[in-house]
Amino acid sequence: MAQLETGDVFTRMKTAAVVRAGKEEEIPLSQLVPGDVVKISAGDMIPADVRLISANDIFITQGTLTGESMPVEKVAARETRTGISPLELPNICFLGTSVESGAATAVILATGPQTYFGSMAGSMVGESEQTSFDKGVQQFTWLMIRFILIMVPLVLIINGLTKHNWREAFFFSIAVAVGLTPEMLPMIVSVCLSKGVPAMSKNRVIVKQLNAIQNFGAMDVLCTDKTGTLTMDLVILERHCDVMQKENDEVLRDAYLIAHFQTGWFVESLITRTLVVHVIRTNGIPLK
Image (cartoon, rainbow, N blue to C red; front, side, top):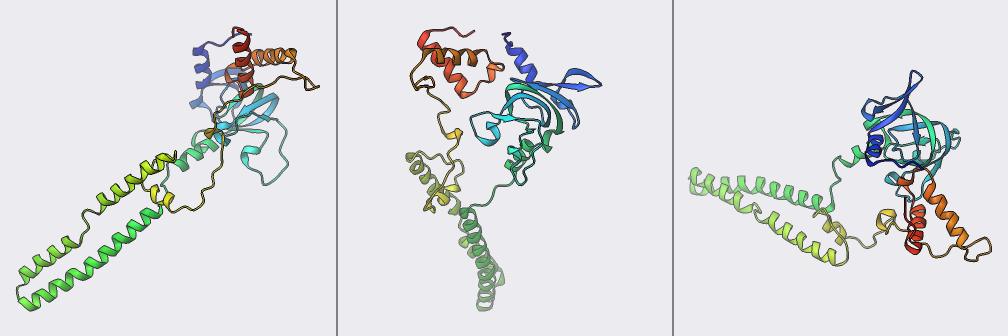
């Protein structure tokens, strides 16, 4: 099997095979437009959101969007079900995914920010929702502002009427306003929140945003979805058996040959990688 050089791999990641005017040519991804017909094969990155026109045993790795480690088979047939997630559509491939094996011809539906991946990136750079700590600080700030707006005029009027020196009364009211302002509050709050970071780290929790410390402290039950990003991303081969549940070296040999010589070797799956590495380590077979 012909091996791709490193330069060829990066070139294919920056360009796409497009059929224009009946001719196939490699053009930069930035020049792709909706309606272009592209050809994808094993090892290619999906250049945009596309709809498959024809497919030949094509499997797509879309872990960047779904977190699943196993590739998903795609077909050109139209989906008849309704109310399903766009990622579950069998004839749609998305930008940010890659071709595990097989080949297909597809038409581009969306490019750039209009893609599914682009919409996700846009939502991530938007304004973050305020935490309970931010809301509490904001409420306290407005309380102090209202208190100052009420107290300062009262002090000015009472002091001016009693002492009949409005100049001194004005400066005294300014001093009262400055004294009511909690100047050390930001530093005190930051120090208190910072003490929570080492406490969370002892429980193997890394907190990126300091304001989230209060939310963690207010939780009674925390439910998370354990995906591939939190695991070792590793499959271990324990046994290789035949249909009779007996260990058989021929099964391992055939599996190794299929895994090693399949198309798109440099975008291997977890199981493919495990088979090859296991055989190499146990038998010293060189990988070519």
